[in-house]
Image (cartoon, rainbow, N blue to C red; front, side, top):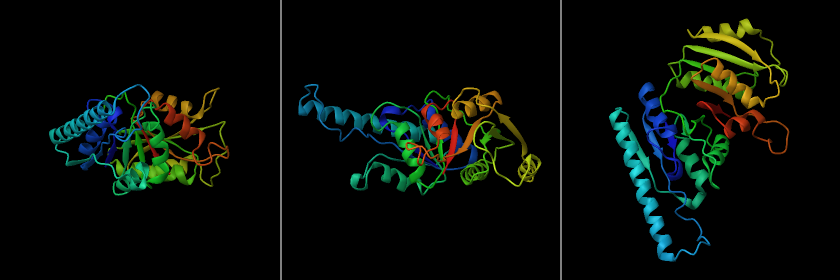
Length: 272
């Protein structure tokens, strides 16, 4: 597993930095922490700071980032999770490509949802979803960090992306006991030669309970409807494909994906 947790959003007792070690412990995986001081090469500000003061701020940020790496390693050690941290950035190919290169060597990339700053977790998540070829697990900043995956809700529209996301979740998380396939009734029509009984039977052959739920938007964004239902059904995880609509802004990223990334309220596994 890989964790992306930059200096500005790292907290070892909550959110993705707490969730990632717990997930690794549960499934017997190791963790690579990508902990970067992404402000290290920020351009000088107009607030009147001298060059020496700016250099001192950069050193302070580097020290804080190193302390974060030590905290993550200590937490992993306490959970008997093999771990390593990467704190140096190679800017030659760009930050996103550098993170993506690391993520491609791991089963999943775990990140947060903080929206502040030009390189916010939210912006990075949107880009990394399409660059890594690996599922992205977004954990809300305020999440208590406890991992569970007994029940998952999978957004289902019979698309390649939805199938990929569900398959990734089932392959990664042996703790899954119950899958709810969730369709939103007033969204796009679902084309399939299979009925609900076939869908349920296909998952049940894995020894996993399954059911199909249908909901309507009722004035909500689709991302809100998906998360509302997942929380209503007491799901530990929302699983969905990162899919596209034809709108200009959404030429790669679908409306459901955008609204979930904008405000994740439970851990969300996305695949593209």
